[in-house]
Length: 88
Image (cartoon, rainbow, N blue to C red; front, side, top):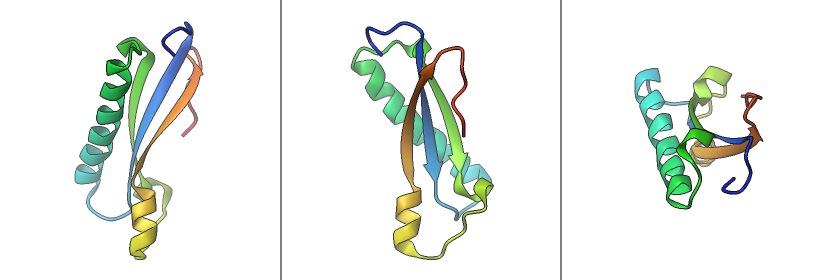
């Protein structure tokens, strides 16, 4: 991204399917922000980064299995042309 004009990084913080929407939204945004700051510290322009929180509950992916819940918590980075939005 540092040397590629016209590309954007969609940083998507993903929470597990437990907890309230308010808390999960904050957690997802915070996770995305950490990754975005790391990209910026490595030379990616802030304008190239779009942060999107995503809650697994939105996708209807409820699970009581602790291992599956841990896998749901993550941050994904999708590289796309700036004029195209990343698919959720």
